[in-house]
Each structure stands twice: as structure tokens, then as C-alpha cells.
Amino acid sequence: MGEVIDIWHYRRAQRLFRLLVDRCGVESFLLGEEDAAFQIDPARLDDAVALAASWLELQTGRAASASTQRLMRNDLRRLLIRALARHLVDTGF
Image (cartoon, rainbow, N blue to C red; front, side, top):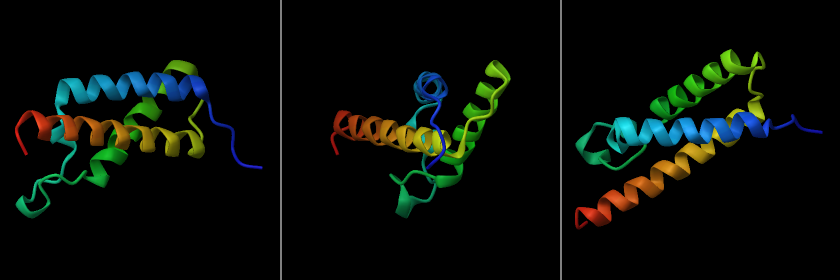
């Protein structure tokens, strides 16, 4: 049997990720190289998930499980892909 996913942690992380993307912009999560202009930087993705997990642990006193963090990472990645696609359409790519 796998680890339990904490839905409360997951839902709060979703809100935090939306705020991060809205305030920092999608470009802050992308690789900086010209040949990889539209690729998500895995290190920045991991940093955002770690930030959310630490913040949630401070709020609840419970650490986010590895399964919850994987789900959070996948959700942030999807959010970034959608935001990047919207940005590309808006700019005429």
C-alpha cells in the first residue's frame, strides 16, 4: 500500500502555485537558454514544491508525504504548461 495523499495539503498547494505563477510569471519557471526558451526548469519546479511543502508543514505541523509532493509537482507542471500555452497564443506563436 502506498503513502496517503493529504488532500488539504494538495488543495492549499494549488492555491499557492496559482499565486506564484500570477505574481512571478511563467518565465520565472523556465530555462534561460535561448535554445530551450519554452522548457520548464526542473530545479525551479522542485524549489516551488519544496517551498509549498515547507509552508504547509509550518501551517499544519504535518509534513507533506512524498506522494503528496509528487502530486503537487505534477499539478504545478500542468499549471505552467497551460499558462505557457496561453502566453504563446496571446503573443501570436
